[in-house]
Every structure is written in C-alpha cells, then in structure tokens.
Amino acid sequence: SRPMRILGIESSCDETGVALVDASGSGVPRLLGHALHSQIEMHQAYGGVVPELASRDHIRRVLPLTDAVLEQAGLPLSAVDAVAHTRGPGLAGALLVGSGVACALGMALGKPVIGVHHLEGHLLSPFLSADPPAFPFVALLVSGGHTQLMRVDGVGRYELLGETIDDAAGEAFDKSAKLLGLGYPGGPALSRLAQSGDGKAYAFPRPLLHSGDLDFSFAGLKTAVLTQVKRLAHAAPEGPATAHLADPLSAQQKADVAASVQAAIVDVLVKKALAALQATGLRRLVVAGGVGANALLRQELNAACQRRGVRVHYPELHLCTDNGAMIALAAGLRAQAGLLPPVVDAASSYRFD
Ligand code: KG4
Ligand code: ZN
Image (tube, rainbow, N blue to C red; front, side, top):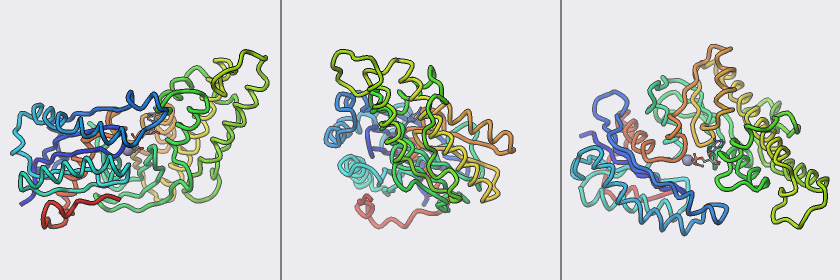
C-alpha cells in the first residue's frame, strides 16, 4: 500500500530540517508540519561550515525537531507511513545522521525508508508554493554546490541541459563575499551590501556567456574580484596595518564591487536560463536552490520572462535554502508517481552518494 504521511529529514550541510507531508490522493502533497534549525551562527566564527561540528549539531537537533513537527501536525509518531531522508550529495558525517535516524525510525515503526537526492528536493520545492508549476519546465538549479539547467518532463524525468564546469553560483557569491571581508554565508551578505553599490562600477567577466552551450563557469570571477580588491587596496591612502585585504577599501568601493559581482553572476544566470528556454521551446521556468532567494536574480528573471511570455515559479523564500519540507515533498511526489522501489527492509536504503 502506498505511504500517505511521509516524514522528511534533511541534514546534508548546515541546516537540520524535518517536515511531515500528506501524500494521499493525487494532489500535491500537503505540508502538515515543518521545523528547521540553522547552524549558521555556530559556524560563523570559523568563516565556513566545520563538518564535525555540523554532524554533532544535527545529532542534537534532529529528534527535538521531529517532536516539534509531530506536535504541529497533531499526530503521534505511529501515524508516520514512511520516513524520507537526504541521501546525498552533502557532507558524509552530516548525511549519516539523517539517514541513521531515518533508518532507525523506519525499523522501529516497520515502515519504509526513502533516500532522496538533495537536488531533486530543491528542484521540486516550488510545488509547495501557492503557485505550483506544471510540467514540462526548464529548471535553473542554483545552490552553494551546484549550478544546473535541466529539462523537467515530470517527477523523475530530468534531462541535464548544462551545468557549471567549475564553481557553483552560490560558491561565487560566497568566495567573493569572503574577499570583501563579509561573513559566512556570503550570498545574503553580499547581496545586502550590493544594494548601496553600482553594478556597473567594475566590468567583471561573464565567462561562457557566448559559448553557445548551456554550461557555466564561475571560477574566473573570484580571481577577477581578488585582482580588483587588491588594486583598490594598493591605491588607498596608507593607513594603519589592517587585518583583511579589503579593509583599506571605502564602504562605497566595497558596495560597488559587491554590486558588480552580483550583476555579473545574475547576468550569466539569466542569459543562460533564457537560452535553455529557447533551446527547448518551453515556456515555463522554475528557479530553485539557495541563490534563488537573490532579489536581483528574481527581478531580472521576472522582467526577462514577462517580455517573452514565460512563466517563472520560485519556491517560497523560506524554502529556497535547505529544509526538510522539500525532502518529504520529493518522496511524496515519487510515491504518487509510483517511482519508489519495492522496499525489502529499512536498511536497504542506508546509503549516500
Ligand atoms: O541550496 P542551499 O541552501 O545549499 C546548498 O545545497 O548548497 O544554497 C546555499 C547557497 C550559498 O552559497 C548562499 O550564499 C546562497 O545559496 N544564497 C544566496 C542568497 N541566499 C542564499 N546567494 C545570493 N543571494 C541570496 N539572497
Ligand atoms: Zn541545498
């Protein structure tokens, strides 16, 4: 019999997310409860995610969050019909926490365990919004670890159209932010600073913009930003010795660099997304992953797509970054599509990649 209430656990990086969906019937699975704990504050002092600290914090958070979700839903644990978890990609130790807990719950309840690909979670997350997309569509997947364009014809029917050959878009945001002395995570901080800057101040490269394919490259951008920051720092009047490379820059110079980097990244993402729509002849675009929260990206995509009569769908803002809802949802949609393998025993899905 098909699972109906699916618990989802996300623990691939620095957010512990748990959610419960109801996937009975054929409509989009309904969110019954959702809880999230972000480790951002804990990692901030180190300038990035410390894997061992991440794993340990997932261990601390995952069961209390599960309790909170069940309480929101007003249901006992025994009402759960299947347990989904992120099986990868991500930090191995962090993933093991989610899969270990999911398998333990599955064995205790005698219910199936479903391993979900993290990117499929992101990809399908707009189905939880008030304006869910219809198939087929082009998906622009932009996270801290991935930058991909896909053709999506249905649940489980994904065709990779292009992807980054080096850094991801989120990585470009994060590394540029680091060069400017902004904290972790860099994307939100950099886009905040960019609001008071001029995006045309510095002409940063738009790699592969005219490559004729749908691939991306962002590694050169960080070198260009480094060169620019160094140039501005050397030209600054001699001051006291400073801790960070970007310290001699004025607030306006930093804001201009931030705005120019953001403009370069967004420009490439928008042009390639439009090229993918053109190549496939599709008239629907889905944007997902952490960078999908970027206000300039949304603004530019909305404007460009409106001119072309293309509809754009985004996840709700709080579901752009990692969360448990997208994992429970993806498992629910797979179950509804009849795509779940027959379950032999709970331990059979104990794997990550
Ligand atoms: O999807 P996500 O939460 O985690 C991964 O699966 O990687 O994405 C995190 C990435 C980080 O690189 C972060 O800096 C970026 O998304 N990000 C943003 C914004 N919010 C998050 N980048 C630009 N503008 C934002 N507003
Ligand atoms: Zn993610």
